[in-house]
Length: 83
Image (cartoon, rainbow, N blue to C red; front, side, top):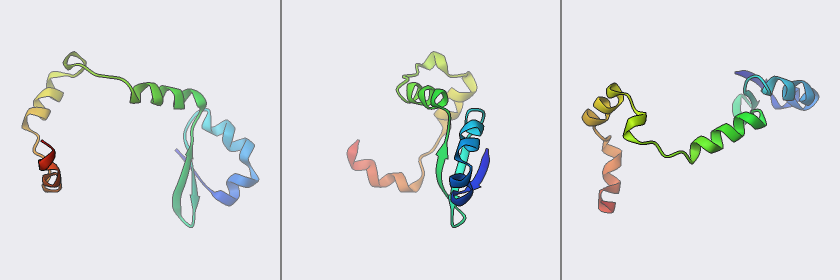
C-alpha cells in the first residue's frame, strides 16, 4: 500500500491514479489516513463480496472450530437485550 500526503496527491493525481490500479493509495492529512484510492475493479469486487452470503461449506474445519470456541468480548453485553 502506498501512502501519500494530500498535497503530494493533488500535485500528482494522475500518477497516483495509475498506482491505484495496482495497489491501494492511502492519502494522508496531518499524518492521519484520510482516504484510500483503489481501482474501480477492486471496488466492484469488494461491493460484490459485501453482499455475498456464505454457507457452512465455505468455511474450513479450522474456521468452524474457532467459531465454536469463540467468546464474545465484555463490550458485547450491551447488546444482550436484542437477543
